[in-house]
Length: 150
Image (cartoon, rainbow, N blue to C red; front, side, top):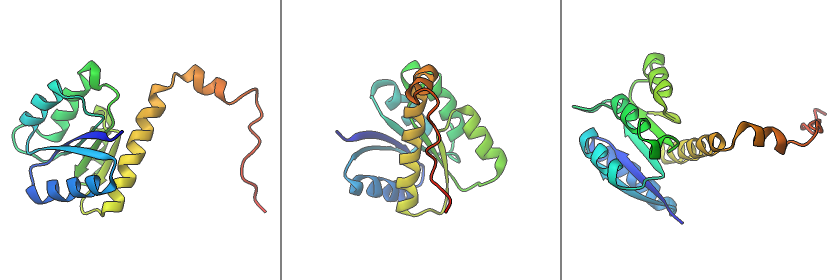
């Protein structure tokens, strides 16, 4: 079943690129919006399994959007990828602190995008597993199976 994506990006060229890459991968349905206001309206009424947002947008920026999305119980675990031209530690740190699952810095390739999306989805899936379940899944201490050095 395809993953429904909300893509929030004020640049038409970047929206087109990201949407095309995801749709060409075959397992994504992409809803595109150009600003945070449209994103908030859509997030409130549609069920997206992934949100990708730019940070630098007019009106509601990506950081404000992350905060608003994470406040909604239904999207508290939705994978959220931030796209930014700023690779400054402060912007990345703020995005992650607000609840972003991953950050992708422009320029990037289609492969970079797909890898980041996969990593973000895996991160959020891991958060869905209660800690006790993760610990119990390892068995009773038989963890010595690391790849050997030869």
